[in-house]
Image (cartoon, rainbow, N blue to C red):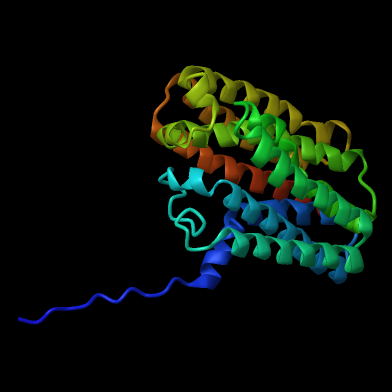
Length: 299
């Protein structure tokens, strides 16, 4: 009688380190930063700024997410959504993760300082501290309003992109930051609602756990209303034109519809659809800003 030995493949270290940077989240953040770069000028921002700014912001964002994975390794291990992260499974040690974050973060700062400008480097570094330290280490385990207070760091990419091109952060850039800031709570709370069992196991004081599903659904709806109003500001201050306005109205109609259903007709499927749409919403909204900007510039 023969016996077979099952040989496990060694973990793909490159893939594990790549996963630490939360690439899907980073992609959306960097996309918003790139839009900020293009909106900061009537022409083309220039290849050096565009490439170096994108790379530098990407590296520092990835470093912040790696620290997040490091700090929350034990919490991640208790959640089905995150249990297979290399840090949660112990396949990447704390020193390895910390060294990885330090290397890519330091490289990102170097790229931004030497090839972009010091303002962008320092703003991006402050954003790193805001997410990796203030949000992850202090706010997240302390208050159910963590995502509201800490959302500013996640909302910064358009300002970082604008600073990369203009070496300044004017009012228009902060309007874009405000849009993402107001978008973040309904986006995240939709996820937290259909993942509430995960957050119960995690021990984190997320709003659906501490205040209940009905209250969280109401907050999603109220923030959606606030978001719809906020997204009109670029048109009101004449930063954008009718193309953006039309896109914002249509996108907000569906965002409000999803949020109302989360509030009044909740199911996990409805919340999951609302969360998925919120990502599409932000991407298309910022794309509309870009199309509108260059359409009127070429007239």
